Structure formats: structure tokens, C-alpha cells
Length: 491
Image (tube, rainbow, N blue to C red):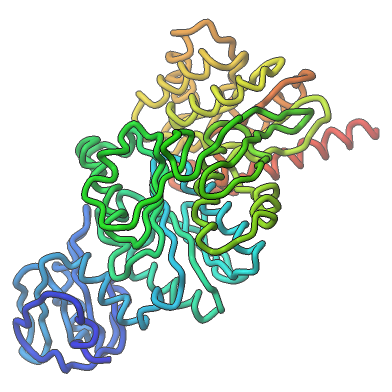
């Protein structure tokens, strides 16, 4: 493939060499360079790809895409662009043959709800006969293959590589989570989403290595509505007007608001032993009753989003209702059956905002007791520990403080910080450092009508200690505890 073909649609300056140069591979990791590679110099937070120019030339790179002047032999083509990350998205799309043009592409952004909504959409569309790829926080799914994720939205090269694999696997469409970082770093450039969804926005991801302030966070999130053909937005969000400012897409809305195009009415909770759900009447662009086996008002929003998307795929009412009843997301209000007397669930809530939302929702089901088991990650802000401790102390009847990913800190030190937050409340707590022992305590002390939530780990299947990840899946721990209980009872 010629350099000129890869650069179509981009503004650039050819500083030296020829755009007729043939390219064997496109690479942004210097370790993967081979003969005739095109190497893209990415300026990262820690490493600057421009520093590897001498190394990649020695390895055989014949084309460089740069943001700044570099020294290179005259036979090496040097292409200068304003932003190499932006350029990489377009180069990658061309390199993989513009696979997005052969897929219906759905991008979902927002502070909360992205993961659950992507799986709901996948469930509904597959129920209707579509073959759906997925890219998200937990994994990328391509046919029967599941690839664990390291970022919510992968680098643009990987996005395009996944799209190519999805096309080759016979997928009709792809649904993917789009993070603010992904938008800010141009990971979703190089194509236009058919559908862009904005679930909600709350202050989050603000810090030295993310967004400087809420305005910047909102601006980056809103970029999706300039990169899609149809934008679907939560009409109830207090920042709605700012979210849609400058949008270039056809706009649709959903929510509880009478002004929403697709809205929920007459919502009420549905619950029983080991079962928590919610039902409502769908009105507006589609009208039928909906019941889902996931509790909380946010579950209504997630399902409304999924329905708003799938409406464009001509999915029948029957298929939507059926698929929503069975849609599940690992580690997102995931109910694990351990008793007929109480409800136990696993959830990824790992900051104060998410934990408060979860516990407030579960309170609405009027449990006998609300029991919250959680820990906090090491080498992270202590304020998160204080805040989560205070939230659980205020909203849970019993908090079981345990270990999460201690990383390079001592678990007991983290637990002591959480206790500082709880001490601001009248909440009762116990501390059990070993997570398996803590879960066993929760199960063995469960009372009729309790709701017990294991918070923080969610879909994660490891525990990070002193720089090493050890296998630890809460589902496995629960199964082991139940088996050990059975063996003791049989003796």
C-alpha cells in the first residue's frame, strides 16, 4: 500500500522522500517496526514516539509520520501533520480498508451506563438476528472471540483492527463504549458513527492526567455529537442544552421528560426473594410495557437508550421485550443465587458517586438490611476511601470493610482510611481483611429479606498485590464458600 493512499483525507506536508513509497505495516509501537514499516510518532503522557526515530530507522522503517522536525536519511519519507494521534485514526482506517463503512456503528458515551447499555443493545440486536461486535470496558467481542480490554476505548489503530476482524467474521454492526479520553485523543476519528448516544454527565475523570475541569470533560464528551449521523441524548440531563451545543447530527431524545421523543411513564419497582427489577410504560416513538430484571431508575435509562438505538434497526416489540428480560452484564448489579432468603449481588461501584447511586437505588426496595462489602484500591487518592466509607456508613445498615486491589500499600492501612470516613456516620461495620473471608461472613450472616452487595470488583477476576495480579473472581469465591459449607454439612 502506498503512503499517498494511507494519507487520503488528511492535511500534511511531505518534508522529504516520496508519498509513492510502499508501506508493509503501520506501526505506532517502536518494538513492532519491521522492514518498510510506516511509523507514527505518538506523543504520550510518559513516552514521546519522536525519540525512537533513530531506532525505528535502524529496524527498517521507511516512512515517518511526525508532529515536529526529525532527522532521517534522505531515502526515508517524512510526513508532518498537526496531530499524529488524529492522523493515526485516518491512516489506520485506510490501512484496514475502511471497515466501518461495512458496519452499522453505534458509539455510546456518558459518565454512567455505557457498559450496561452496550450489552443491552448487543442482546436486543442479536435476538433480532443481527451479528454484533462489541468494544468496551470489560472486553472486545468478535464472533466467538473475547479479548480483555485495557482501555474503555482502545487506540484508533486497534479500533480499526477490531472493525476489520468483525467484518471478516460476518458482523453486521458494532456497539462500542466511547470514553471522554477516547474522544479527546481522537481514537474514534477516521469514520463517522451511524448512531452516537449520550447517556448522562456528572463530574468525573477530572485530574492531572485526565480533564482539567468539568467544562473540558463535557466538551470532550460532546464531541461525539459531531462525529455521528444520528445523535440520541438523555433529555433529563441537567446539562442537556450544553451537551447538544454545536451538534452536527440529527437529534433524538429519551427520558422521563414530556419533551423526550421516547419516554418512560408509570415506573414502579418489582421485587421478590432473590429478584429485583423494575417496570414502566414506554411512550412516544414506540409504545409498549417494559419489565427488566435489573433494579433502579438508572436501569430504565439504560433500557430506554437501548430501545432508542434498536428502533433504528427495525427490531420488533416482541424481540425488544424478550431481549431486555435476559440482558446481563458481568459485574453490573449481577445477582448471584446463594439463598432463597436474601439477595446477593456483585457490582463494579468503586467510587463514592457510583456507590451512592447503587445503595440509594437498593434502599428503594426496602430490604430488611442493606449490607455493603467493599474495599478501596491502593496507590490512589485517600479522599476516595474517606468518601466511600462515609457513603456506605450513611446508607448501609452494615458495612463489611475488606481488601480490594491494595497494589503497593498495606491492606490494613487502606481499611483504616475507610474507617475514618465511616466514623463520620452512625453506620455499623466489621473489618475482615481477607476478601474471601469477608464474603463468607456476609453469606453466613445473611438474614431473611437482606440485600447484600459486593462492591468494587465487578467484572475483575484478579487482585493486584505488590505489582502482581493474582486470580480472584468473586463468583469463584462464592462457589468455593458454598461448596465448603456443603462439605461441612455432609460430615
